[in-house]
Length: 230
Image 1 (cartoon, one colour):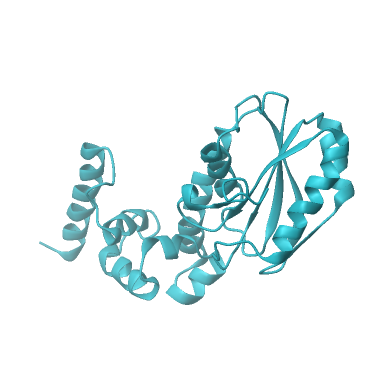
Image 2 (cartoon, one colour):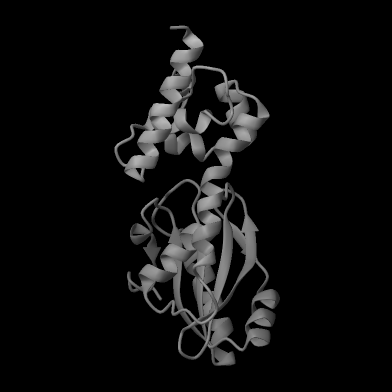
């Protein structure tokens, strides 16, 4: 049997395995990548390519979290392949964010932290959001209020106040990311939290929490409220 027929048979077996099992639970990381690459390389042995790429990155997570430019350079693949791979987690993010609709309660840390983790996914620089909640602590909207460098964020107090007043929010949860994955707040983070709390208080608005997204597990993100700082 020719190599071409062998590849076709292998591809069919891998696809049928996924269809039959209905999940990727039993697939090894290189097999998941191999399956994805079927749709970028219709005539090549993607098993070998998948192993080569993962050898460069060490894990599927590290690969998919890279930018298209980074994947093209590091894995020596075409732009089409790089976009296919890098778009996967962003699709997941889009789906996850669509679950948070106006009126959903974000009173619990777990819900707010999960939402912020998706909201801040893939941000290579620090970025800050304000989650605006109504009197019952139900979600109204999220507002990007600041962006900074690797460890600091500067924000516009006017923008925050304007958004709070326009939306008639009664509670606010701040959230920003630490790209370096340092879990604990910096002194600047603490000072900013106090500043925002004092800014909102005269408006009759309560700052419920400030969550630092710093971990792939959203339950391990840092909470000012849970740590008694707020």
